[in-house]
Image 1 (cartoon, rainbow, N blue to C red):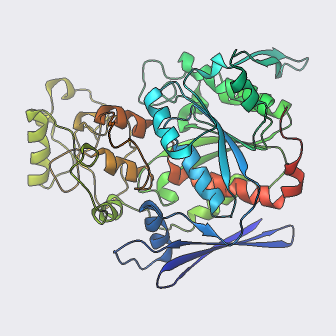
Image 2 (cartoon, rainbow, N blue to C red):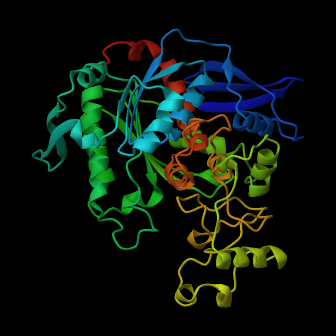
Length: 445
Protein backbone atom coordinates (compact mmCIF):
# COMPACT_ATOMS: atom_id res chain seq x y z
CA UNK A 1 0.00 0.00 0.00
CA UNK A 2 1.20 3.48 -0.88
CA UNK A 3 -0.24 6.36 1.11
CA UNK A 4 0.29 10.08 0.92
CA UNK A 5 -1.08 12.96 2.99
CA UNK A 6 -1.33 16.44 1.48
CA UNK A 7 -2.55 19.67 3.07
CA UNK A 8 -3.72 22.89 1.47
CA UNK A 9 -4.61 26.22 3.07
CA UNK A 10 -7.44 28.56 2.18
CA UNK A 11 -8.42 31.70 4.06
CA UNK A 12 -10.94 29.86 6.19
CA UNK A 13 -10.08 26.18 5.96
CA UNK A 14 -7.34 23.58 5.92
CA UNK A 15 -7.93 20.81 3.39
CA UNK A 16 -6.50 17.33 3.88
CA UNK A 17 -6.20 14.83 1.02
CA UNK A 18 -5.29 11.21 1.71
CA UNK A 19 -4.17 9.44 -1.45
CA UNK A 20 -3.90 5.66 -1.32
CA UNK A 21 -2.82 3.03 -3.81
CA UNK A 22 -3.77 -0.57 -3.00
CA UNK A 23 -3.21 -3.34 -5.54
CA UNK A 24 -2.90 -0.73 -8.30
CA UNK A 25 -6.28 0.75 -7.30
CA UNK A 26 -6.24 4.45 -6.35
CA UNK A 27 -8.39 6.01 -3.64
CA UNK A 28 -8.62 9.63 -2.48
CA UNK A 29 -10.27 10.89 0.70
CA UNK A 30 -10.73 14.65 1.12
CA UNK A 31 -11.75 16.41 4.32
CA UNK A 32 -11.40 19.87 5.80
CA UNK A 33 -11.48 21.73 9.10
CA UNK A 34 -12.26 25.36 9.69
CA UNK A 35 -9.09 27.26 10.46
CA UNK A 36 -9.35 28.04 14.16
CA UNK A 37 -6.17 29.53 15.53
CA UNK A 38 -4.75 33.03 15.95
CA UNK A 39 -1.23 31.67 15.81
CA UNK A 40 0.85 31.66 12.67
CA UNK A 41 2.29 28.28 11.68
CA UNK A 42 4.40 27.63 8.61
CA UNK A 43 3.19 24.05 8.22
CA UNK A 44 -0.47 23.46 7.25
CA UNK A 45 -0.46 20.22 9.22
CA UNK A 46 0.14 22.28 12.38
CA UNK A 47 -2.89 24.42 11.60
CA UNK A 48 -4.92 21.26 10.94
CA UNK A 49 -4.00 19.72 14.31
CA UNK A 50 -4.31 22.95 16.29
CA UNK A 51 -7.72 23.68 14.78
CA UNK A 52 -8.85 20.23 15.88
CA UNK A 53 -7.44 20.75 19.38
CA UNK A 54 -9.44 23.98 19.45
CA UNK A 55 -12.64 22.04 18.90
CA UNK A 56 -13.06 21.91 15.13
CA UNK A 57 -14.39 18.66 13.70
CA UNK A 58 -13.34 17.41 10.22
CA UNK A 59 -15.87 17.50 7.40
CA UNK A 60 -15.51 15.04 4.54
CA UNK A 61 -16.71 15.15 0.95
CA UNK A 62 -17.76 11.53 1.37
CA UNK A 63 -20.56 10.68 3.79
CA UNK A 64 -21.74 7.12 4.19
CA UNK A 65 -25.35 6.56 5.19
CA UNK A 66 -24.39 3.50 7.20
CA UNK A 67 -22.98 4.10 10.68
CA UNK A 68 -20.08 2.09 11.98
CA UNK A 69 -20.94 0.59 15.37
CA UNK A 70 -18.38 0.73 18.18
CA UNK A 71 -18.12 -1.12 21.49
CA UNK A 72 -15.54 0.18 23.98
CA UNK A 73 -14.47 -2.00 26.92
CA UNK A 74 -12.57 -0.43 29.84
CA UNK A 75 -13.68 2.76 28.11
CA UNK A 76 -12.51 5.27 30.73
CA UNK A 77 -13.33 8.84 29.78
CA UNK A 78 -13.55 7.99 26.08
CA UNK A 79 -10.17 8.98 24.67
CA UNK A 80 -9.89 5.79 22.60
CA UNK A 81 -13.35 6.26 21.10
CA UNK A 82 -12.83 10.00 20.54
CA UNK A 83 -9.72 9.41 18.46
CA UNK A 84 -11.15 6.52 16.45
CA UNK A 85 -14.35 8.47 15.69
CA UNK A 86 -12.28 11.45 14.57
CA UNK A 87 -10.16 9.28 12.28
CA UNK A 88 -13.27 7.71 10.75
CA UNK A 89 -14.86 11.12 10.27
CA UNK A 90 -11.88 12.32 8.24
CA UNK A 91 -12.88 9.61 5.74
CA UNK A 92 -16.58 10.50 5.80
CA UNK A 93 -17.52 7.55 8.01
CA UNK A 94 -20.09 8.25 10.71
CA UNK A 95 -20.01 6.14 13.85
CA UNK A 96 -22.22 5.28 16.78
CA UNK A 97 -21.26 3.81 20.14
CA UNK A 98 -23.33 0.74 20.82
CA UNK A 99 -21.96 0.02 24.30
CA UNK A 100 -19.34 1.28 26.73
CA UNK A 101 -18.18 -0.41 29.92
CA UNK A 102 -16.04 0.80 32.79
CA UNK A 103 -15.82 0.19 36.53
CA UNK A 104 -15.07 3.87 37.23
CA UNK A 105 -18.41 5.69 37.46
CA UNK A 106 -16.78 9.12 37.11
CA UNK A 107 -14.90 8.16 33.96
CA UNK A 108 -18.03 6.55 32.52
CA UNK A 109 -19.97 9.76 33.14
CA UNK A 110 -17.43 11.71 31.09
CA UNK A 111 -17.75 9.07 28.36
CA UNK A 112 -21.53 9.47 28.33
CA UNK A 113 -21.30 13.26 28.08
CA UNK A 114 -19.25 13.00 24.90
CA UNK A 115 -20.33 9.81 23.13
CA UNK A 116 -23.92 9.04 24.21
CA UNK A 117 -23.68 5.24 24.02
CA UNK A 118 -26.85 3.17 23.61
CA UNK A 119 -25.69 1.13 26.57
CA UNK A 120 -23.54 2.18 29.53
CA UNK A 121 -22.29 -0.52 31.87
CA UNK A 122 -20.76 0.57 35.16
CA UNK A 123 -19.35 -2.81 36.09
CA UNK A 124 -16.49 -5.25 35.61
CA UNK A 125 -16.43 -6.69 32.07
CA UNK A 126 -16.29 -10.17 33.57
CA UNK A 127 -19.73 -9.58 35.09
CA UNK A 128 -21.15 -9.52 31.56
CA UNK A 129 -19.53 -12.46 29.81
CA UNK A 130 -18.56 -15.92 30.93
CA UNK A 131 -16.03 -18.10 29.10
CA UNK A 132 -13.58 -20.93 29.42
CA UNK A 133 -10.17 -21.30 27.80
CA UNK A 134 -9.15 -24.77 26.65
CA UNK A 135 -6.13 -26.09 24.76
CA UNK A 136 -6.24 -28.13 21.58
CA UNK A 137 -4.00 -31.06 20.64
CA UNK A 138 -1.21 -28.69 19.60
CA UNK A 139 -1.42 -26.90 22.97
CA UNK A 140 -2.96 -23.75 21.47
CA UNK A 141 -5.71 -22.02 23.48
CA UNK A 142 -9.28 -21.63 22.27
CA UNK A 143 -12.50 -20.27 23.74
CA UNK A 144 -15.36 -22.46 24.86
CA UNK A 145 -18.82 -21.87 26.37
CA UNK A 146 -18.76 -18.11 25.76
CA UNK A 147 -22.04 -16.73 27.08
CA UNK A 148 -23.51 -13.47 28.29
CA UNK A 149 -24.18 -14.02 31.98
CA UNK A 150 -25.98 -10.79 32.86
CA UNK A 151 -29.68 -11.03 33.74
CA UNK A 152 -30.36 -7.65 32.17
CA UNK A 153 -32.27 -8.52 28.99
CA UNK A 154 -31.90 -5.03 27.49
CA UNK A 155 -28.11 -5.32 27.84
CA UNK A 156 -28.06 -8.67 26.05
CA UNK A 157 -30.46 -7.40 23.37
CA UNK A 158 -28.14 -4.50 22.50
CA UNK A 159 -24.98 -6.61 22.55
CA UNK A 160 -26.54 -9.24 20.30
CA UNK A 161 -26.56 -6.63 17.53
CA UNK A 162 -22.81 -7.07 17.24
CA UNK A 163 -20.41 -4.29 16.26
CA UNK A 164 -17.93 -3.25 13.58
CA UNK A 165 -15.14 -2.05 15.87
CA UNK A 166 -14.20 -3.36 19.29
CA UNK A 167 -11.91 -1.16 21.38
CA UNK A 168 -10.37 -2.03 24.72
CA UNK A 169 -7.89 -0.41 27.08
CA UNK A 170 -7.51 -2.91 29.96
CA UNK A 171 -6.04 -1.48 33.19
CA UNK A 172 -2.36 -0.85 32.56
CA UNK A 173 -1.14 -0.38 36.15
CA UNK A 174 -0.20 -4.03 36.45
CA UNK A 175 2.05 -3.77 33.41
CA UNK A 176 3.60 -0.35 33.95
CA UNK A 177 7.27 0.13 34.75
CA UNK A 178 6.08 2.51 37.47
CA UNK A 179 4.60 -0.48 39.31
CA UNK A 180 7.76 -2.18 40.52
CA UNK A 181 6.12 -4.41 43.13
CA UNK A 182 3.64 -6.35 40.98
CA UNK A 183 4.88 -5.67 37.48
CA UNK A 184 3.92 -8.54 35.20
CA UNK A 185 2.03 -10.55 37.84
CA UNK A 186 -0.90 -8.27 38.70
CA UNK A 187 -4.27 -10.15 38.58
CA UNK A 188 -5.76 -7.23 36.62
CA UNK A 189 -3.65 -8.36 33.69
CA UNK A 190 -6.08 -11.28 33.12
CA UNK A 191 -8.74 -8.77 32.08
CA UNK A 192 -6.87 -8.54 28.77
CA UNK A 193 -8.06 -12.07 27.90
CA UNK A 194 -11.74 -11.14 28.25
CA UNK A 195 -11.50 -9.02 25.10
CA UNK A 196 -11.24 -12.20 23.02
CA UNK A 197 -14.45 -13.52 24.60
CA UNK A 198 -16.30 -10.33 23.64
CA UNK A 199 -14.86 -10.62 20.14
CA UNK A 200 -16.41 -14.07 19.78
CA UNK A 201 -19.84 -12.73 20.77
CA UNK A 202 -19.76 -9.35 19.02
CA UNK A 203 -18.01 -10.51 15.81
CA UNK A 204 -16.35 -7.15 15.03
CA UNK A 205 -14.42 -6.62 11.82
CA UNK A 206 -11.73 -4.63 13.63
CA UNK A 207 -10.26 -4.87 17.13
CA UNK A 208 -7.71 -2.65 18.86
CA UNK A 209 -6.42 -3.30 22.37
CA UNK A 210 -4.24 -0.57 23.88
CA UNK A 211 -1.80 -0.83 26.75
CA UNK A 212 1.59 0.34 27.95
CA UNK A 213 4.50 -0.87 25.86
CA UNK A 214 5.71 -3.12 28.69
CA UNK A 215 2.55 -5.24 28.51
CA UNK A 216 4.52 -7.80 26.50
CA UNK A 217 6.56 -8.54 29.63
CA UNK A 218 3.53 -9.88 31.50
CA UNK A 219 4.47 -13.09 33.28
CA UNK A 220 1.25 -14.82 32.21
CA UNK A 221 1.72 -13.83 28.54
CA UNK A 222 -1.79 -12.37 28.32
CA UNK A 223 -1.07 -10.58 25.03
CA UNK A 224 0.25 -13.72 23.36
CA UNK A 225 -2.64 -15.82 24.68
CA UNK A 226 -5.18 -13.24 23.56
CA UNK A 227 -3.57 -13.10 20.14
CA UNK A 228 -3.82 -16.89 19.78
CA UNK A 229 -7.47 -16.81 20.86
CA UNK A 230 -8.24 -14.14 18.25
CA UNK A 231 -6.38 -16.05 15.55
CA UNK A 232 -8.45 -19.11 16.44
CA UNK A 233 -11.54 -16.95 15.78
CA UNK A 234 -10.25 -16.14 12.30
CA UNK A 235 -8.59 -12.81 12.92
CA UNK A 236 -5.33 -11.63 11.39
CA UNK A 237 -3.32 -10.04 14.20
CA UNK A 238 -0.52 -7.55 14.41
CA UNK A 239 1.49 -5.80 17.12
CA UNK A 240 2.27 -2.13 16.76
CA UNK A 241 4.09 0.25 19.07
CA UNK A 242 3.33 3.93 18.79
CA UNK A 243 5.64 6.61 20.16
CA UNK A 244 3.64 9.76 20.72
CA UNK A 245 6.42 12.23 19.92
CA UNK A 246 6.96 10.57 16.51
CA UNK A 247 3.37 11.12 15.34
CA UNK A 248 2.85 14.72 16.43
CA UNK A 249 1.78 14.31 20.06
CA UNK A 250 3.73 16.78 22.23
CA UNK A 251 4.31 14.04 24.81
CA UNK A 252 6.67 11.10 25.25
CA UNK A 253 4.00 8.42 25.47
CA UNK A 254 4.77 4.90 24.26
CA UNK A 255 1.90 2.50 23.78
CA UNK A 256 1.39 -1.02 22.47
CA UNK A 257 -1.63 -1.93 20.33
CA UNK A 258 -2.74 -5.43 19.49
CA UNK A 259 -4.61 -5.08 16.19
CA UNK A 260 -6.93 -7.75 14.84
CA UNK A 261 -8.81 -7.69 11.52
CA UNK A 262 -11.20 -10.12 9.86
CA UNK A 263 -9.67 -9.61 6.45
CA UNK A 264 -6.19 -9.36 5.01
CA UNK A 265 -4.88 -5.83 4.57
CA UNK A 266 -1.68 -3.86 4.57
CA UNK A 267 0.01 -3.87 8.00
CA UNK A 268 -1.07 -1.09 10.34
CA UNK A 269 2.59 -0.67 11.27
CA UNK A 270 3.34 0.48 7.71
CA UNK A 271 0.60 3.07 8.02
CA UNK A 272 1.95 4.36 11.35
CA UNK A 273 5.45 4.54 9.87
CA UNK A 274 4.09 6.72 7.07
CA UNK A 275 2.39 8.96 9.64
CA UNK A 276 5.65 9.45 11.50
CA UNK A 277 7.15 10.81 8.30
CA UNK A 278 4.72 13.74 8.50
CA UNK A 279 6.38 14.89 11.72
CA UNK A 280 10.17 14.98 11.18
CA UNK A 281 10.60 17.18 14.26
CA UNK A 282 8.88 16.26 17.54
CA UNK A 283 6.37 18.77 18.84
CA UNK A 284 7.26 20.20 22.20
CA UNK A 285 5.59 21.62 25.31
CA UNK A 286 6.00 25.16 23.98
CA UNK A 287 4.00 24.22 20.86
CA UNK A 288 1.18 22.85 23.00
CA UNK A 289 1.16 25.70 25.49
CA UNK A 290 1.14 28.40 22.82
CA UNK A 291 -2.06 26.81 21.63
CA UNK A 292 -3.43 26.60 25.18
CA UNK A 293 -2.75 30.29 25.74
CA UNK A 294 -4.76 31.13 22.61
CA UNK A 295 -7.87 29.44 24.04
CA UNK A 296 -10.12 31.58 26.18
CA UNK A 297 -9.97 30.37 29.76
CA UNK A 298 -12.08 31.06 32.82
CA UNK A 299 -11.55 30.98 36.56
CA UNK A 300 -12.94 27.48 36.85
CA UNK A 301 -11.03 24.83 38.82
CA UNK A 302 -10.45 23.00 35.55
CA UNK A 303 -8.21 25.82 34.31
CA UNK A 304 -6.34 26.42 37.56
CA UNK A 305 -3.59 24.40 39.26
CA UNK A 306 -4.21 22.54 42.49
CA UNK A 307 -2.77 23.87 45.72
CA UNK A 308 0.55 22.37 46.77
CA UNK A 309 2.41 22.34 50.08
CA UNK A 310 4.62 25.26 51.04
CA UNK A 311 7.69 23.05 50.63
CA UNK A 312 6.75 22.04 47.10
CA UNK A 313 5.89 25.63 46.22
CA UNK A 314 9.40 26.68 47.29
CA UNK A 315 10.92 23.89 45.18
CA UNK A 316 9.03 25.02 42.09
CA UNK A 317 9.97 28.65 42.72
CA UNK A 318 13.63 27.66 42.98
CA UNK A 319 13.47 25.94 39.57
CA UNK A 320 11.94 29.00 37.90
CA UNK A 321 14.15 31.58 39.63
CA UNK A 322 17.33 29.65 38.84
CA UNK A 323 16.20 28.57 35.37
CA UNK A 324 16.87 24.93 36.25
CA UNK A 325 14.95 21.84 35.22
CA UNK A 326 16.16 19.28 37.75
CA UNK A 327 15.85 19.81 41.48
CA UNK A 328 19.19 19.35 43.29
CA UNK A 329 19.36 16.52 45.76
CA UNK A 330 19.60 18.70 48.87
CA UNK A 331 16.27 20.38 48.07
CA UNK A 332 14.40 17.12 47.74
CA UNK A 333 12.58 15.51 50.67
CA UNK A 334 14.91 13.37 52.76
CA UNK A 335 13.17 10.19 51.58
CA UNK A 336 14.05 11.10 47.97
CA UNK A 337 17.65 12.17 48.54
CA UNK A 338 19.23 8.75 48.23
CA UNK A 339 18.60 5.84 45.94
CA UNK A 340 15.91 7.57 43.91
CA UNK A 341 15.31 5.88 40.55
CA UNK A 342 13.37 8.61 38.82
CA UNK A 343 15.51 11.74 38.44
CA UNK A 344 12.65 13.64 36.81
CA UNK A 345 10.65 13.71 40.07
CA UNK A 346 10.21 17.34 41.22
CA UNK A 347 11.53 18.41 37.83
CA UNK A 348 10.36 21.18 35.52
CA UNK A 349 9.03 20.53 32.03
CA UNK A 350 11.42 21.44 29.22
CA UNK A 351 9.61 23.85 26.88
CA UNK A 352 11.69 22.75 23.88
CA UNK A 353 11.06 19.03 24.39
CA UNK A 354 7.95 16.85 24.39
CA UNK A 355 6.29 16.48 27.75
CA UNK A 356 7.06 13.46 29.87
CA UNK A 357 4.31 10.84 29.95
CA UNK A 358 1.19 12.33 31.50
CA UNK A 359 0.20 10.12 34.43
CA UNK A 360 -2.46 10.38 37.11
CA UNK A 361 0.02 12.32 39.28
CA UNK A 362 0.53 15.31 36.97
CA UNK A 363 -0.88 17.78 39.52
CA UNK A 364 1.84 16.98 42.05
CA UNK A 365 5.54 17.85 41.46
CA UNK A 366 6.58 14.91 43.64
CA UNK A 367 5.06 12.47 41.12
CA UNK A 368 7.23 13.37 38.13
CA UNK A 369 8.48 16.20 35.91
CA UNK A 370 5.25 18.17 36.22
CA UNK A 371 6.30 21.69 37.19
CA UNK A 372 5.08 24.19 34.59
CA UNK A 373 7.88 25.32 32.23
CA UNK A 374 7.32 29.04 32.84
CA UNK A 375 5.47 29.34 36.15
CA UNK A 376 6.08 28.06 39.69
CA UNK A 377 3.12 25.71 39.72
CA UNK A 378 1.99 22.28 38.61
CA UNK A 379 -0.05 21.55 35.50
CA UNK A 380 -3.77 22.18 35.37
CA UNK A 381 -6.21 19.46 34.36
CA UNK A 382 -6.96 21.44 31.19
CA UNK A 383 -3.28 21.64 30.24
CA UNK A 384 -2.82 17.91 30.81
CA UNK A 385 -5.86 17.14 28.65
CA UNK A 386 -4.36 19.14 25.78
CA UNK A 387 -0.99 17.39 26.16
CA UNK A 388 -2.94 14.12 25.98
CA UNK A 389 -4.47 15.24 22.68
CA UNK A 390 -8.04 15.91 23.82
CA UNK A 391 -9.77 18.75 21.93
CA UNK A 392 -10.66 21.77 24.07
CA UNK A 393 -14.33 21.08 23.31
CA UNK A 394 -14.23 17.73 25.13
CA UNK A 395 -16.56 17.75 28.13
CA UNK A 396 -14.95 16.49 31.32
CA UNK A 397 -17.75 17.68 33.60
CA UNK A 398 -21.23 19.14 33.71
CA UNK A 399 -21.35 22.83 34.55
CA UNK A 400 -23.23 22.25 37.81
CA UNK A 401 -21.42 19.07 38.83
CA UNK A 402 -17.63 19.31 38.97
CA UNK A 403 -16.13 15.99 40.17
CA UNK A 404 -12.95 17.60 41.52
CA UNK A 405 -9.38 17.91 40.28
CA UNK A 406 -8.13 14.68 41.86
CA UNK A 407 -10.79 12.63 40.08
CA UNK A 408 -10.15 14.34 36.74
CA UNK A 409 -6.39 13.90 37.16
CA UNK A 410 -6.93 10.16 37.44
CA UNK A 411 -9.32 10.11 34.48
CA UNK A 412 -7.06 12.17 32.20
CA UNK A 413 -3.83 10.43 33.22
CA UNK A 414 -5.35 6.99 32.61
CA UNK A 415 -6.89 7.93 29.26
CA UNK A 416 -5.95 6.56 25.88
CA UNK A 417 -4.65 9.55 23.94
CA UNK A 418 -7.28 10.47 21.32
CA UNK A 419 -4.58 12.07 19.21
CA UNK A 420 -2.80 8.71 19.09
CA UNK A 421 -5.92 6.61 18.51
CA UNK A 422 -7.20 8.74 15.63
CA UNK A 423 -4.58 7.06 13.43
CA UNK A 424 -6.03 3.69 14.40
CA UNK A 425 -9.39 5.09 13.27
CA UNK A 426 -8.01 6.24 9.92
CA UNK A 427 -6.35 2.86 9.36
CA UNK A 428 -9.56 0.97 10.17
CA UNK A 429 -11.61 3.40 8.10
CA UNK A 430 -9.48 2.93 4.99
CA UNK A 431 -9.77 -0.84 5.28
CA UNK A 432 -13.50 -0.53 5.89
CA UNK A 433 -14.07 1.52 2.74
CA UNK A 434 -11.87 -0.66 0.56
CA UNK A 435 -13.67 -3.80 1.76
CA UNK A 436 -17.10 -2.26 2.28
CA UNK A 437 -19.20 -4.88 0.49
CA UNK A 438 -17.46 -7.67 2.34
CA UNK A 439 -18.11 -6.10 5.74
CA UNK A 440 -21.75 -5.11 5.42
CA UNK A 441 -23.27 -8.57 6.05
CA UNK A 442 -23.15 -11.13 8.84
CA UNK A 443 -22.38 -8.83 11.78
CA UNK A 444 -23.54 -10.42 15.01
CA UNK A 445 -22.69 -13.85 16.35
